[in-house]
Length: 445
Image 1 (tube, rainbow, N blue to C red):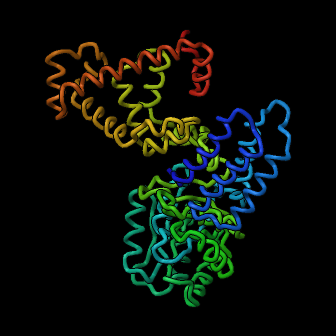
Image 2: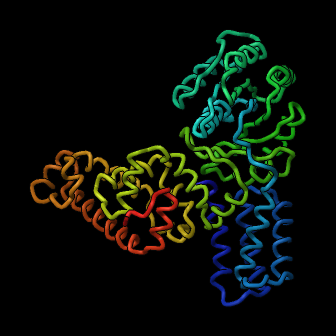
Image 3: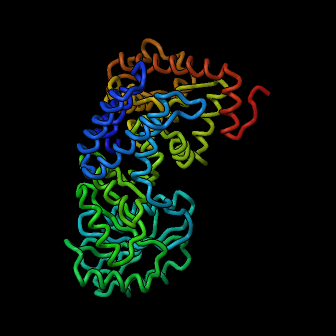
């Protein structure tokens, strides 16, 4: 999870409020100290931390809760609002036809971000083209071509060319039928005069709708000055912060960039091509504070599952009570495609309370083991798990390379899941709501 340490510290601070008998000045003082400690450990600028916590303290002590809201909920909401205000600095990148120019120094994750952005747009239904305009780094074209092949997007380049602007001009002509064109430009170890001129020449030819700066979040508070320097040079319209997973300086980079003219539009949260999130301050803070992000979870599920007949059939079986191991397998495969289990679970409100009780690596390994076991079953066994007994359990275990106990554990897990689903589907109101979301009629008829 992004900024896991900061999130846990913030949730602990809020836990002091929700667990208190009453709200008083002494409690507010203690919570403010906890917030300051958490933010400073995440590399957020000292002056910014003091300004933020002063505002939270003043509001918590002076404002009266609005009608229908208790003192505890009101103080938590103040913390949430002020953290959002700290990071909110512009509109998200529009999902519409456009030309995007990517800029940044060497080693920041620029080329990889091009591939991730191309995948995002293609999943939204746009025809995308990638232009390899980095004429200095020898492997730049090959790397972009590999990424393009991985996400199913065409790549244009002229290996050996010495003129980036010409490559872009030819690339735009080549991709005149594409709705979205993303240009990967050259970088340097520092923002030098020749790089600035090259970027200006490319921009003059491309006339991009967006100029996105890619920054490694590990630079921490230096992200702000870097963003300012690039903005003065080429007019940056948005920033992509990479390597936001597991870096102690991520809070510094986020807050530093948020105070510049450039808006944060995406976060790179891992090495996988799908580890890319559109930045939204409200949703980001909501997840940090353990409030979840169900809207993003639903959107992510729609993108992954829409048009997948197997997933849709399995969902209908669940609605009707006809839940088989085959349906369970399909659902597990679908969830696996959405990303690491910890990331998915972080979007569910309240799951942070279980974080110390859940071993995500062990759970992920168990799900993989379950899929291997089911791969060793016959169609009959997958459709009717009741037949899996005695010699069948031994045969399945041998084929999957596991112990018979693991097979029995899977069958037990399946039975518990079926029972839970049956109870949930017994709630007619919930069932109708889920059927409506699926776009289906009531299966009782």
